[in-house]
Image (cartoon, helix red, strand yellow):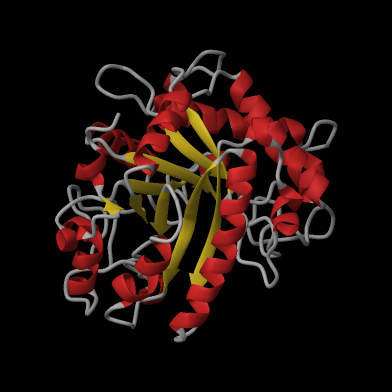
Length: 356
């Protein structure tokens, strides 16, 4: 990939680059949570099961008749100066879709599969040593990480609507930290080091004026989940606005998935009530959804039981049949997915447009 990220050059890194819209978005999320659960989909408008890069398309739109209320995007590769992210999405196209989703009344959530700072390998690469401590204050790679954060701040500052206002987003960095697969995860750093990483990221970006953010914290499915385990990596109330959990289905046994989901959401709900935070199902799904009634018979019954702000299903990858998590034209789940999206509890983009 070329390391050209041209539009960033137009935005100087300085304080007060972003409008104070994070708190406005948080208030909006609180209002919407009282109305229902927003449906979300990763990379929804940039590719689908059988297409890529077409403008104005969406597998959700073409099956359910509306865009998802929440669209997810990922910044992995931005920190290296690439023009496309780790899934091949051009950052200028991503910026355009973020603005479009905002202007149609939808909401954006952003994750960051940052590459390993020690060698610029992917997020799943864990060399000997501790990558996290190397980028914290006093670490040998802190200057490098600061430049990475400058790129993130510049990207967010570049996402402006027609009136010139910076688009507010839910930012979910350093997710699934309680697992062992990322260089910032439980097998690669201590819980204290992780908390310092999250806190430093928050402080640095806030000091640069990046206050258009609702900050999200989301561990992953654990073998034994309880409040103490969930809070192990929690960076603190002043650094977090919304908490969530990432739970996927890995077997044909729908009940196992539902049991896992309920166990995790019980904990998230308890923490949310205690810490006074909004809660969400920040990632979920079932690869290629082989069950034609999965959306209404497996996912929806559990989602309805909890006061969650949104549920985000992962992407429909045109180049990977396993990475298809939402119905698409020709799929056996289309009818069921339509019923899911029409349920009174489920909020799509048009359902939230007036709540701003």
